[in-house]
Image (cartoon, rainbow, N blue to C red; front, top):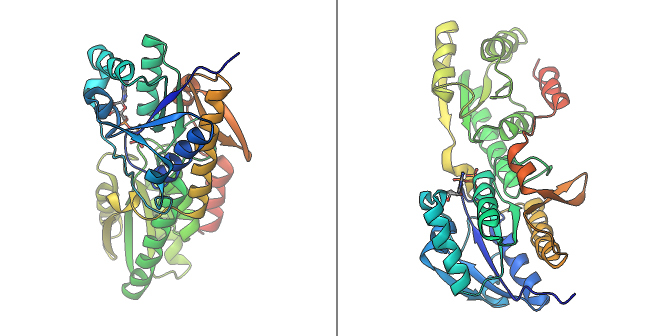
Length: 327
Ligand code: ATP
């Protein structure tokens, strides 16, 4: 059967993640290599509705593999949540003669893409790009490794000042509803506790981290708190510590958008290059409404419905390891 897709559209959407540019580069080059035209859609679904679109050549993606953020910008777009907004988006696809859409983003982005595919029979492929690593069906998402390394570096620096002044640091980490970044950054930085939404053991952890840490003659402690683990995030945890242990100086650090920035790690660049290439391969194989992911070092195609709806739990062995390591 002769292959029908002549032009693809590509967009980045939701929170930006380091490595999105590397994915865009791989998609663009993979498409052109296979004789498919590429149209870059600027500012996510907003650009799709507004027709903010430009054809990309291989040169347009030169020199971007090392750049954080996304050169085609990202946006949150409430209009796309409405049937009218998606109709306008579809009209743009028709006008621009775009036969298939590749979206780089997180679960919200995939939810929108799936609805467009259901309503208008548009072939869509999702590439997981989010620092949160919260998509089911893939061991890693693009941007997660870079964010993890950024958080680890920040916590290392806090450790230096924490030990000098005998302080307790409470560090707030991003992650939407998922604790992957917080848990793994805690292990990587050798911090004392991870307060994550998946395991609501705040009081016990405070006592373990500070009580036991002190008994062992540690003169400082660092607790990482996932932003939505408890209402009030790191500030609320710091208040609890101050009430229970007023003898220690407690300081809060909110890492915020620092966590999204920076040049992607080698891991994220390679992952993005692989997944971008496979997004094109999947289209050529007539895959539809799937996410390209990686599981046990193998590339996998995961139905968007599963990637969005199933909940990825944190590995319990990792959680148990933290308790052994932080005694
Ligand atoms: P991240 O979690 O990394 O921020 P994300 O892709 O989950 O990434 P969202 O802001 O949730 O980010 O979603 C991005 C965009 O996807 C939204 O601005 C909206 O345009 C679209 N979107 C999200 N949810 C829906 C939905 N239920 N229906 C249609 N479109 C949606």
